[in-house]
Amino acid sequence: MQILLLVVYYLPSPIASAKLIHDLAREFRSMGHEVLVAAPDDSILRDCEISEESGIKVLRVRAGEIKSASRWLRAWREARLSSIMYRKGKSFFLEHSYDLIVYYSPTIFFGGLVSRLKRLYCCSSYLILRDIFPQWAVDAGVLRRGSLAYRFLKCKEKQNYDAATVIGVQSPANLKYFSERRLDRRYRLEVLYNWAAATGTMTAGSVWRGRLGLADKVVFFYGGNIGVAQDIDNILRLAERLHNEPRSHFLLVGDGTEVPRIRALIGQKKLSNVTIHPPVDQEAYLDMLDEFDVGLISLDRGLKTQNFPGKMLSYMDRGKPILASLNPGNDLGDLLERHEAGLVSMNGDDDRLEAQARRLLADGELRARLGRNARSLLEERFSVKSAARQILSHVETKS
Image 1 (cartoon, rainbow, N blue to C red):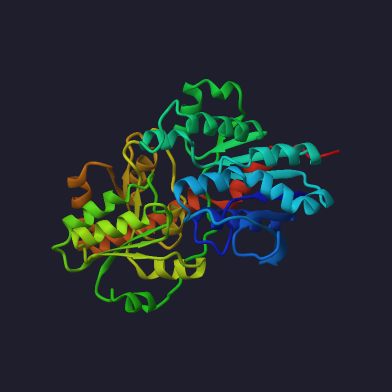
Image 2: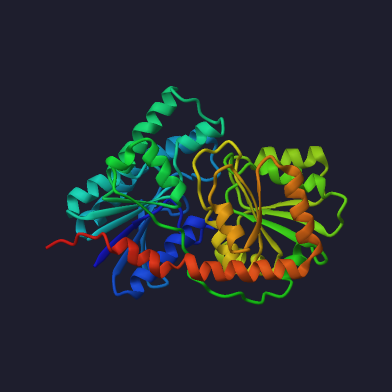
């Protein structure tokens, strides 16, 4: 079977979705299928480049930088992704044929491209839906319901959903969101949990600890997007409360729209126990995780939609305990607590979050036990093999 995967970020990007799609592509390939990953790229010089990476064929299409662009520039560039991807990759798309298109959201702007390619190939499509956007932007106060921008984005969201044969949401709470809006009558929906290819913890020595001056610290590690939905202020409030604990340190690795403001806030508050580090490649990212102590998850308390952040899987893979501060109603909290894989509080309950952080700071045995349980949960619930099989179970192959 010929499978096309569309994603905004692919390796060596440190964004969680890049690793997620890479693991899925490798699993499809191990099952005997031919796989192409197509992604925009701002670093290539030609309109498109084709390469083979770890046995996976990759089509990169030249487009403007997205991740660290300003909010409105990013929106403009993402809105043009379908047309740019097709126009610059047209000769390749016309010369090949696929039995299945798997596309990842965010972004919501692949709908036009997927619809066009589905007609061209007469094939099925599967949407891996990981952000219910623009709803979360309304919940976080970034976007006003009823505004021109909101109406435009809702149109693109619908186009994205309409292009899917099946939509895989990431939690039962997301199914409820669609059901409450009667969208389950329009779309074919199911829960598709995030996944990871378990690799086991490597021993990296103390390279990063030495490099960053964290040799004797218990490091609370956050990796990934530093944006509005993550409410990094939440982490800074915790760091401020633990400022009197000389062994604690907070390391934020990534980029995003909030980085300049967060840097300024760290300076204003004189938080010497917080470091922001630029994004690193996947190998370095995993090396960091091997060395540091606790994986942080933070989600804005105003979010009404629920998600399981992709960074959680890397934490689990490296056997790290998770300290999660979540939006109300997020069923991730129940999962972590039921499997004793982490400590959970609701965003806004700063006292509880502080108490949990202090427990992890003081108790190395607790960190080790929760980390082992996190690794076991990954193997039990978030297998890339089961995700690949679930997606392929819906394929309507061409006769």
